[in-house]
Length: 268
Image (cartoon, rainbow, N blue to C red; front, side):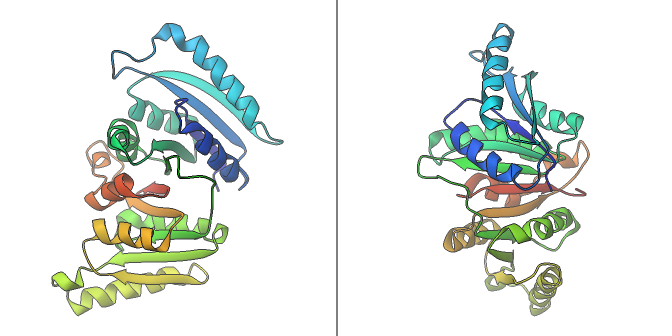
């Protein structure tokens, strides 16, 4: 599944929950983990290059805490714009998943997403797991996986990833939004149902649902109502123009979801 996971480490309050999530994910058959800290070039007050040995030592200590039989753990400190550095490292090192912790829903949440996690979501060519971190969130449950799809080519990778992950969850739900109350025709709604049925042929006991309303709002509200433990979404593009087209729905979900979000690039 995720043989090699690259983990963005910033030694913030996000770290303990991120560690718990990583331990659960690595139990799915991960063979290698790379812990990476970025000396950001974005802000004047960020750590200087002379601090590199300090952060390498801290990463080494963290690697010791995460050590497990059969698991190789590497550590790196890089410099630059964090979102770009992390996604470039994932490509360069051949990671199967990039794991980033997002701070809780307060004033810092929007700032953090805008500065690092959302940049990574726009730039990534690898699946990206965004882990929300707040004091109220503990543990790493796998009760309900929710796939958000619009049936386009851009979400084919997300659908394939959901098929792979499905057996890890007690419940599986695939949703799409129709905006029926805003004039979607019966044919469009029927097409949405047919597409969801085609996914159900690949995922055992999949629940399917066509939601009514703006996808950006309807999917978030459904995830909250169902207490989803993971939302799987797709993103557009694999070239320098398309990579910035995360999409308004995907971006809204990445910003506002109160559970982890797995962003899967087109063609993954």
